[in-house]
Image (cartoon, rainbow, N blue to C red; front, side):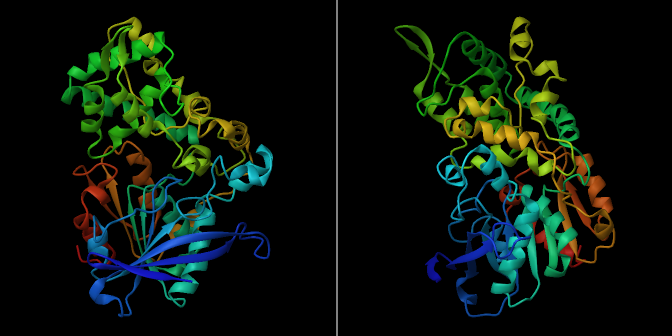
Length: 433
């Protein structure tokens, strides 16, 4: 059953779909997916080509736009848009600390979560496409992890695509998670250096907060244990267009005077817990490293192991000297499952996923080399989340892919740049540029 309603300039329709949990067992267990159809108000009755949006993450539902915000405004000029909540996210059958125990114990939960990678999402898309387009091809727009899904789409079901647009999401076709993080930590260090160059006053502020956390036990109002490593992980903001400014504002009023001495302010703690909690997107923590699993090697908490190769990120060593504290970026660590109350019940499940050795390949280099789908990709210079060298190597491996390499935007360029970014990439798929 569908329900349609209006927002300024658009008509929205709630769409629900039933798909197999395991597409290799189509007669087996099913899960429910949700997607929001969006069409311009004046075009609601028109037969328009479809564009499906695949969100970044993994673990996030599709954007909840109001009206024609951001890139959606450009897409609605000539498309009917489907905003898909990928399996386990948003209004699709959720996977979190509340629902996963219904599967059984940690082993059963880990087995279940192996079905929440890019390959399953793409097969979901193909089931949905048959129901909403009548079998016609559609255009896919993949942001970040959604771009990883799009490269899988080009590898496994290119016959479903009229065109593909990727923003900040060209994955390495064969890198192990260790390779990804060995490339990531130096990028993160450059982003932190750029932040301190812009806001030199934050050097002492960050050191003072880190020192406080090394000498005090701090539990945030939601039950999150704020360790120094957790504080450093707030550097994930530095990959976004406004991230350096948001981090600066967070640090500028971290302390208040109390009868017991200086303490982290309620305002700081409230803001920090909202940034650190995985309650709204636990799949990000659970399957993030699994997105790089493609062979018999376990991911084995790759980001944590590789971090040890970069001792400059050790807060205690930094504070023993006079250097600036380094923040970290997009990485998942086992301590998160101790600190975050939304993740604590899932620690053993996460350990089993980290030890898994039966990941299937996600990309088909031979098929990509023979690609005939028009593809365009925005590659952001020195993207903190996706390595530029890896992205460009993959771009060269996909026949006909056209890149737009830019330092005008950070990783969230399709949001920050809005209609202009999407317009340029759509033009590239039509060879208009």
